[in-house]
Image (cartoon, rainbow, N blue to C red; front, side, top):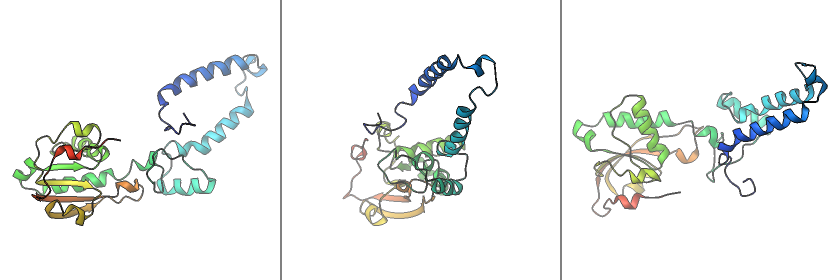
Length: 230
């Protein structure tokens, strides 16, 4: 899998079986150790010490035990580098950690914009995420906060199959990479509500959040055009 440049989590489900098999092999191999037979606490002091020290050194690479700024300084000082799991560029943090940042900021902007609409507009507005992460973030936090936002929509992967839930494409709150000039080709009125700019999040998530009104006749909306998979 490594030689084929697979992502590190593709084999995640088999790791527990490997650990169990390794533990049995380790037990059988060292069962005859004098330290083991005598029941010593530190039967393998050198090996145990090595595991403890190296485990503590690399722990921040796999578990969020350090604050982001501390993590950056720590890994730079020890020349520790995470393997890239995606082709997209990363910021100060590897994607494993970076994907945990920016979501609250994004949701707060969308929720505030939604509640500023009239009741009639709230009933018909589309909340659009350029990718499934953004749409999923809106749906997840909508439930966590017991908010009243409609289901988010997105053209990416399985989200496209769930459709638009009957929302009106002439009114949208959109988290998209388009510039105001690019999106103005499709909508009469374009308002930048905010920008998802958490420095620790993935750079491709640094997107504008728009309020869009009145789709132009020259750019009719077709849900099939929004579909994309990767």
